[in-house]
Image (tube, rainbow, N blue to C red; front, side):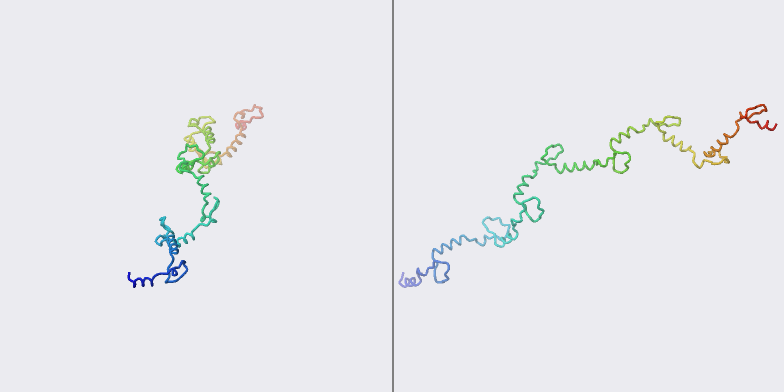
Length: 265
C-alpha cells in the first residue's frame, strides 16, 4: 500500500473515543460499540416481524401473534368474572354458567344409552324415548277420563260413558224378547205388550171427541160420558124392577107396586 493510501486510511480511521457504548447519543459521526450492537441484536431477535401479526380472529397459525386491534375487540367482548353465574337458578340470558355448574350438569346428564325405546323396561334410572311418549299420548287421548264416567242413570251430558256397574244393573233389569206378549189375552203382570198390539190399541182407542155428554145423540160409533153414565145409573136405581110389579089386587107386600093394568082397574 502506498504512503498516500496509508495517509487516507489514517484520516478516516475511527478512534476509540468515537465509539459510543450507549443508546442515548444522537451523534451522526460516532459509532456504536459492539456491546450495544449485541444488545440491539438481542432486542431485534425478540421482536415480532409485522408479517407475523394476524389482524383477524380466524388465523390458527401458532407462530403468529394477534394484532392490538383484535386484542381490543376481544377485550370489549370478553366475559368478566362477575358475569359468571355459579348457580342453576339464574334466568339471565347474557350470563354464562360456571365450570362448576357445568360439571354438575354433566354428571347428571342423561346419556343416549339411558333412553329406553320400549314400554317393557322397569329401570327406575332410565328415560322413555320421545317415540314411546308419543305412542302413550295417543293411547291416553283414546281413553275415557274417569271424570267422564257416569255412575248413575240420570246423567244426560254428552261424551260421557256409563259405569260398568250401572250397565250390569241395566242388563239384569232389561226386558228380553221372550217377555214381550203379542196378543191381548195374556194376563201376565211382568210382561210387556208388543208394539204391534200397541198400534192396534192406538187405532181402536176412543178419542175425547168421540165422547157424547148428552142423551140425545144417536151416534152408533160414539160413547156416553161418565157423567151421563152416572145419571143413567141414578135413574136405573130409581126404576121398579119387573119382579116387584104386582099384576093382581091380592098382594100385600109393601115393597111391590101395582101394574098399570091393575091401577087402571
